[in-house]
Picture (tube, rainbow, N blue to C red):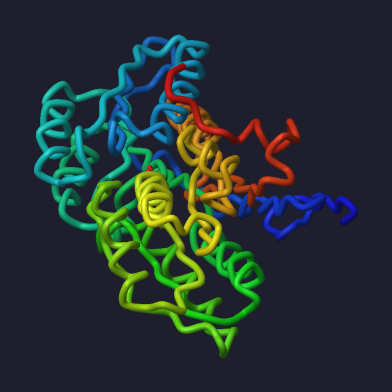
Length: 333
Ligand code: T6T
């Protein structure tokens, strides 16, 4: 397939890579962060709270944000939840709030539970950037930066339908309801799968971001649905869990799997033929651009209310292409 490049906002195909052009940055606003601080980015206290700290997606995002913040002379530190749970992330948020930083980048683990705290921090003058995940209340955040997750779900559905020869049952396994990113992926995936009349979409299962749970869920689904031909994993841990479950059941390659993300274990499973498609995001771009937007706000410049970053569909055939492998996530900076 020839390579077609277009600018932003379009689905483009480069070779066998479906590079999903970044959704255009839309809207701009004043800094929205209250009185806050002035006088440029240098010396500004900026804090990052990610989702699961040990997750290579967030490690990759943190490395890039840290590098960008250092280049701008910011006082930057990062932390993250030990697990995907509001009760674990809330104390981190409360301790950051008490220090009243100039800027906060955060991946909220729920679309509403932390909103009151975020509004309080914002009204006290901290400029808030939502990175990756977001909250339902539009008044939170001077900027929101993430992949176009719904589009990524659609790409996964089309790729999986093709691998399944457009027939059989397919299962979606994801983290938990109320996560903006994975909810959007499931929405895009299931709507797109509706275009294939001979594919039956089974009820979505949730694994609480635990690979062992995803492994047992795929095995029990296999037992209950002999015609299971495909699975969609909403994120990293789900992808690696499904790969493990299929390998243990001796079904790797028999059930085709499309998984979001491209952390090292998923890349290894893709190479081994246990996973067939990875929809990789660009967490480094998310982290870098969030720091840039905060710097613009500190300098009194206009800020983009919403920025979409790139995704790439990776297969065994194109994973060695440097323009593709550059999207693999890191486990350390
Ligand atoms: O898929 C990413 C992220 O986009 C999502 O919000 C939560 O899970 C990951 O961090 C991968 O584990």
